[in-house]
Image 1 (cartoon, rainbow, N blue to C red):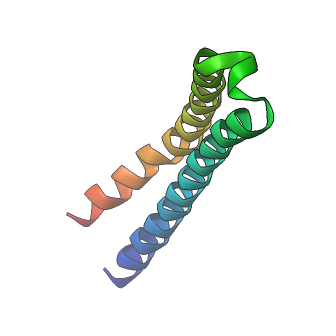
Image 2 (image 1 turned 180 degrees about the horizontal axis):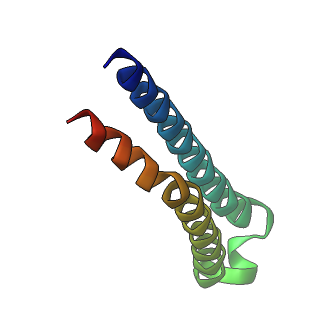
Amino acid sequence: MKSKEIRSFEELQKFRWFERIFIAMLAFSSFTVYAAVKFYGQQKYGYAGIFVVFTVAFLICLFEWRNCVFSKWDDFIKSIRKLQ
C-alpha cells in the first residue's frame, strides 16, 4: 500500500509540473498580447491584429497543453483508481 501511495504522489507531482507548464504558456500568450500592443502599435494594426496574435498564441498553448497532459492523463487516472 505504501509503494502505491508513493507512486501516486509521484504521478501527482508530474501532473503539477504540467500545470506549471500550462501557466507559463498562458503567461507567454499574455506577453504576446503585450508585445503586439506595445511594439507594433495599436494605430497601425488595430485591435483586430492584436486579437489575431493573441488567438494564435493561445491556440498554440492549448495544443501544447493537450499534448503534454493527455499523454500522461490516462496513467494518472489509472494510478488513482488502483488505490481505491
